[in-house]
Length: 112
Image (cartoon, rainbow, N blue to C red; front, side, top):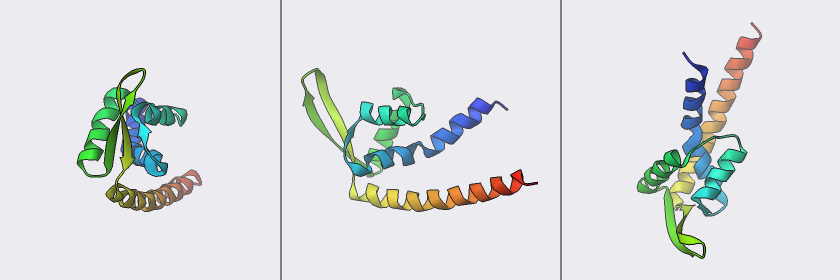
């Protein structure tokens, strides 16, 4: 088993949560979302994020608006819907529980 595959799967598993968390404070353009993820060492390519944003939009968690750009085509800005905010609240609770559980398991196995 290759470690890189496992690491990639772990990142994919939390990517939706990270995107929704980025948008909790307001709308963002796709490149802003990518920049925030890259700053956090979550390496994501455009080919991954666009289908994910579309899926989150189709699920009713995100909305978007178009804004004209002086330096190219119009830009699509994403924001959380009310449903998305509630969904993120649930994910926050789940993440906290999972984080505690994983820390408990991994801490107890380190002592053995």
